[in-house]
Image (tube, rainbow, N blue to C red):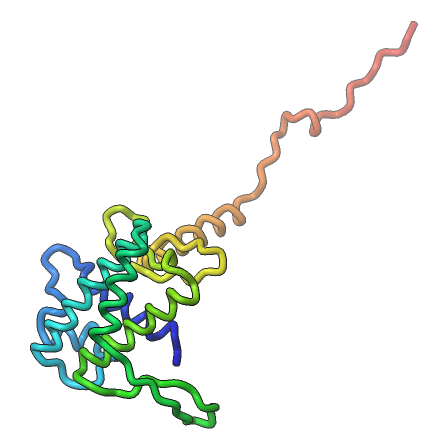
Length: 200
């Protein structure tokens, strides 16, 4: 089981709520949903799937907000409710000359399968890293969520703003390294030594 990829489903789903003014809801229609999440859907999306995915999106956002705000019990109560609502069926498989490993057996609707993977991914991530690793972007106007898997627990921004911050930091370092160090022409180090008059 690729834990990070399953947990990332929850982040992607939750972040479909982040829309610019006037943009359509990525979960508002089957076509929009397929465009936003098509690479992790196992079949055509039905109206029921859209209802389930919107419910799950709301729950994941509430979980991340509660966790980021220090309300870990509330966050985990919601997670436990999702684990009951979307049970998984693990199975051992071997393919592509890999050793036997755990996969989630596909069962239920398209939304049920995505939900089961996302829920167990977040649950196992929390059990390994801690609930405080569920975060909300530090930019006040951005409700984007993320999972902080950094060794020093140092992540503060969602994927979109983390990339932008990284680009700015890299550009700043490049500019600083390309600027020649200035030397003051009138500094004491650049002046010739003063001559001492000979004693008469």
